[in-house]
Length: 289
Image 1 (spheres, one colour):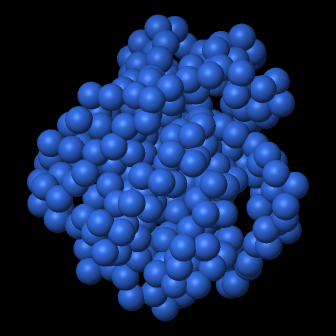
Image 2 (tube, rainbow, N blue to C red; image 1 turned 90 degrees about the vertical axis):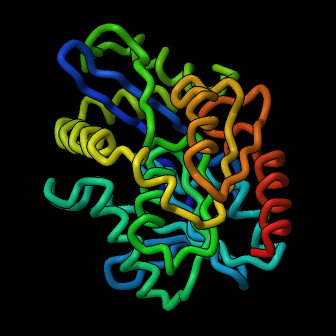
């Protein structure tokens, strides 16, 4: 199995937030563009992509997978002296009791221990950023640096006023388009796959469980105590986690740097991969990581 095949099955960052009146959908999805095949490794309970040699960069994808969302990172950094590792997180394969931010952070810790890495650079988008933040709080001795983009952990945007009926295709289409600066990125193929996922009862239940966990694990009080070098890369037109969220992360994280990408929505590493990689690489050089 390769990364393209996995990407066709799974999708990044479908985040539901519930309250008394509404259910909000955050969608951030993209299929693998290129035809090159990337081998996926399977060892014990772990499935992951790996490329390059050097300082390990562990990439944390969002809800519903989406290893391919970091295609640009996976191609660029192995040429710069880094080993890129993208573990497939057990978003929908663990019991409900282990379907939460804390359990996912523990899974990443166990994976890093299994691989024998002493200290890593974590890169996370949306829910993956939240997992990276919680991991850094719990296991600071394992973190060289942290990179977050469009991360949850402080705020989730209310992207709708009504309950999205499971059969409401137009609602899903609009939410998918809103994730990107350019709505054309949300192709019919992507929307169809999201629609099918929303109509899967088991995945829907686990998605709601994770969303409640994300809200429960708000990081505001923890961030000032976290001193790992942190790179914050944000799309200026992010509607899911708006620019003020990035400003708040910068304010609360004592050792952080904030960089903006214009004409870019919630998934900077997907919409503007070259700019994202340049910003991240320059930050790594500056911090000697």
